[in-house]
Image (cartoon, rainbow, N blue to C red):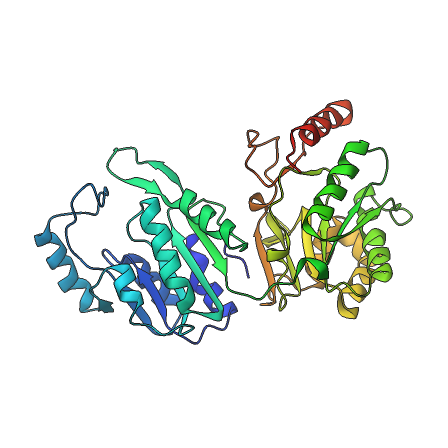
Length: 384
């Protein structure tokens, strides 16, 4: 499953085997409802009061006159099931766990988004999803609409230790309502093959000790004749062998620096075969897992796939070790695999400005002494 762009949401509903209603809060002209309906054939419900609000309450370009709101409701309600109430009030009409998905696209003020998330989250089933639009905190170019979505969503998810994802275009955010492992059940693995600053090792170790994760610090060589990045495969195999009691394994690249103590275990879902950041290359147009983090359950099936990945037949055709794992885990078609954009965990300093609030920094695009200097600086600036 890969929710890369806004249009992917109905495909995610298929992947989640959604069999309960979809609710969209903030319908406007019904454009997004039509897109959902074109792909997904479940029950669709829209929630929108269709009324004019004082500008101080709802600074938004869609906050038009009451006459236009009434006219819009007449059109849309002929096409869809619409509950003409405000968001929190409408949520009270649904039983807990009765919905597959709630999509929030109503008032974009931070206070409203936070209240909406709190009201609707209990209504979502145990394998459902809460998502929303306009993942940003800024004023629109025409200075009409205030977006407080990003700040509110991050605050709400962080307070509840929930894994937050967002799409590559920054349009949508989403939270999967899946059971996750406890910190004591998670094994974090890094492999420092070659010459790495000792500060990086200390940073990874401190982070795991602070969060209660078991940590495996590897120094394994790559299999004979393979590129150095393949060293993660023997490191993972050795880690799994030495820690058979750990339920979930999370791989973290050596050039990732933990900047704060935001937990990783909310991303370790119990019913997922593989989770990882994703990106596109021509050979894998639907995405392969990324080169800085991924996780999988510590079971024989995963171990067999790791071992199989180093067969030279795979290595010759798929020289990128994680492209091989994507193939072996059937990442493009397996609904128990979750691909997401890696920026939610590790924005790369080569492409993004330094952000102290980011949970990690991934130092790519740099080499030699420059890379080591940046890594050491990030380790010093880290709050871990």
